[in-house]
Length: 235
Image 1 (cartoon, rainbow, N blue to C red):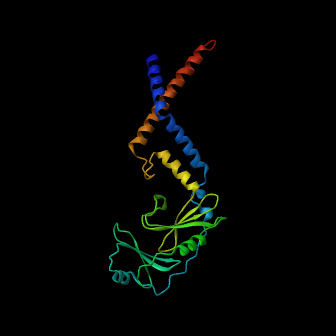
Image 2: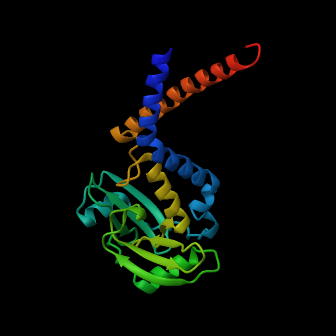
Image 3: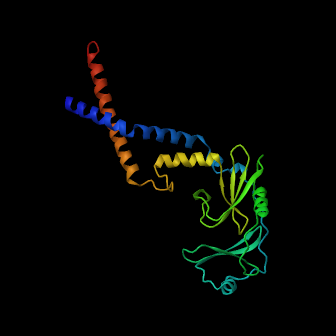
């Protein structure tokens, strides 16, 4: 028994040094994530549903649009937007192309005032837009690789709307709350590049070490309780 206790003590001590800080991060990150309502993380309380007009009867069929654009889309979506009806054409891994469903011509990107107006129309809250920037290479948090308009509001949560230059739709909503949540999530799964991979060796290894920490701690606890019980009068 003494050998098991000695080995458990050594494993517990050294594993604690390795994973103790990460365990604290896991607990703190988990506490933060469960404490913030997901609706607030998604900025749903800052969203106004903007009605779009119904699709007109004279929209071009997909075959005509493909012929006019000289494309062979593998996927296509007809959508009503604030800028009129559009076809969104996708060909394999290529970037999607948005064209007018009335003329077949590509839609010109919105101007900064148009992007600002689209963001304001979709926003609910006490903030005002303080910055409007066209990003040719959006950050990862925008959720898209193609250019996008970024509109920042000066509310308490520093809300950001990412607006599609083609359709005027708000495609992503971010805020200081979202960024805190995202950081805690990345810290939780130890993936600071994409925040998506929770099967990598580092996380698996630390989880295994944490399990060893818990098992050895349980062994030491049982041994300690047994000793205390035997030292009791009449034990």
